[in-house]
Length: 204
Image (cartoon, rainbow, N blue to C red; front, side, top):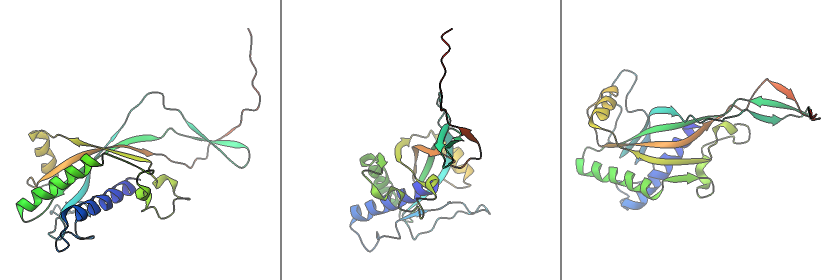
């Protein structure tokens, strides 16, 4: 699910930047946007000059709402599977403009901001490719997403310092977006309940 969302955004952002820049020598499909951690397990920075923007997940938060109820799914033996309420999560995504030419990096960062300014919400109706990276949508429905909504996060200097300190790097031109709402929903369960076939009302 998280992978589906980020792979979709990578593809859409890259297509937008290629079309916007109209510069095949420097902006062509496959060399504009990377989806990867900018930090290797050994702590080294994992940014190359072969792409313009790197996308990285930096945090996850749960959307807490009251009144969530269990889901029930009918089975072949006329019973129901009781499923726990889905977990609704927000993703915090870092977009890093990693170019050795600083003015180009600033232009790339502007492209990212303008992309989300014109495309703040993504759903399957407007974007049929929303779940294109899911190889088996019939049997792996938990990988599917219905809607993504992006909002720019304004970090204070202290928050930026903490973020880049966590990444063991000095600041690089970048922005953080909050993505609402992804739903994590386990569709398998061993807990079966019988269907309600009669309803008795006690008038007393």
